[in-house]
Length: 607
Image 1 (cartoon, rainbow, N blue to C red):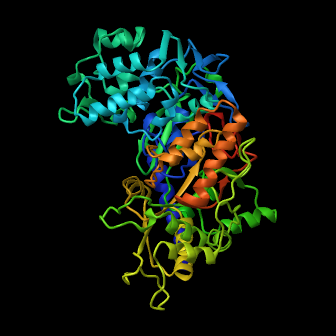
Image 2 (cartoon, rainbow, N blue to C red):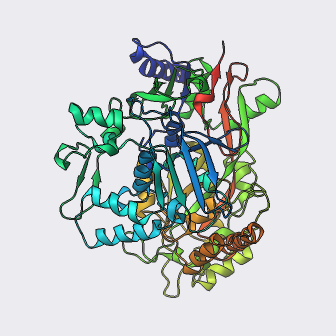
Image 3 (spheres, rainbow, N blue to C red):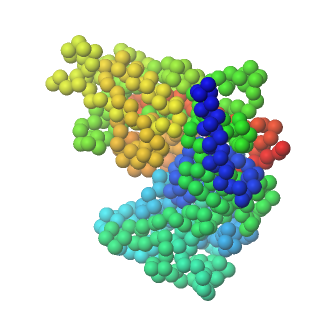
């Protein structure tokens, strides 16, 4: 009796907690549960889908995707042209586009924002996106050397250098061009990503509002006035010892955030909820039928489903309960219509820490590709999707989802092969020398206990991790300790290399194999594995410079084959499925495209 009552009690508490504090506000037009907390609303620092979903409400880049077929649509740029050789892009901004404070959106906003993306001080995971722009890599190296030398220069000097070195050229306030080092067929696709959104410099830097200077910045553009001294900029400063730009992110909070998208930020209570309201200055108000959107955070997946079933939500953006297969079975039997499952442009994997040393200074066994191959060979993926996830996702052995990109096909990596697993481990010096079922090196030292890091926000990774632990102990004779943590600490451990094996997933950002393969570049901000191979780096550069698309795709296929038959920096398990909950008779405008991008301003809700 008590066990049945507990979920209801939790549900009542959650509903009161989340919705009870909003008595002064009516229910939003569209209410949904985020798949996780938003980490940042600074577009240039985003890397999580949850953050980017919020960004598509608040910010508008030069172009956007049509979320039905992912063709490119004009956005802040009402039109654009590409030169015949594919090197020069010319953007004509919508002259009616404004920021949420009434200031005009100009070409200077885009140049400033893209400079932020290309500045090492920002620590963006996507800086390499723009290395294809002529002069961008030179600017990056110039600024990196300044930081290494602890050279102190002003923000304006950095901006001046960017303007002189990088071919992002302003023609007039509403027109600018971008010149590339070589043709990139997916460049517009990249520009549609949230990280390429513009930000408003006076807000980002925290210029003190008021006075004639403030009024001129609003009416004539911030680029027409002298910036205030650093002492009058609340959110940015230059560190006197390192020379690094220090950014505070209070600008990306309610009351301070200035945006150019269809919505503005009305409320953000971390780990609780976020509310968006219509931006009165948005140039095309007819694009959205919503006046308000309410995103709430519910950590417990069971409570999230119960809250949806109670009618308080319009959309549950990720269904992560243990009984996913049972819900899908109900749909198959015609018992419910509000669950939706579809394959994504993403893969589930476990990363190997490829660094020579672990964080504690010990030698890292996974620095050896033979060891990594052994662990991949020793993994029965079919068993994982049958007994751990129970969703029977498509098993894959390489990172690019098969047949997801026209003309690319797929790559077959290493499969389940216990003979090869033991052979590879033995070649690295690890064998069961004393007959106790566990492997040792030539000195009799046991294989180091494996620290397997996973997130606790969903039961999925706990069950997969348990299955891997049991398989690797049985098949290889190694010990595994599981370490579960929440997203925030997980992200910190991942970036710092504080793990031996760690769960991961990757969704493609744009429709090209490089959206997956670039994460293996030595300097890529998303290369959490610490994997580095100069030959792979060089091969990716060669492929990037190949103008013949058929040849380029063949070169990328060869790179992926080497990565997943020889190098194996990660164990890829399966193609990801996405499960949504919403009533298709009530909620319209959500897409089931594998790219998983939702423009929530496209949603309509009917009674």
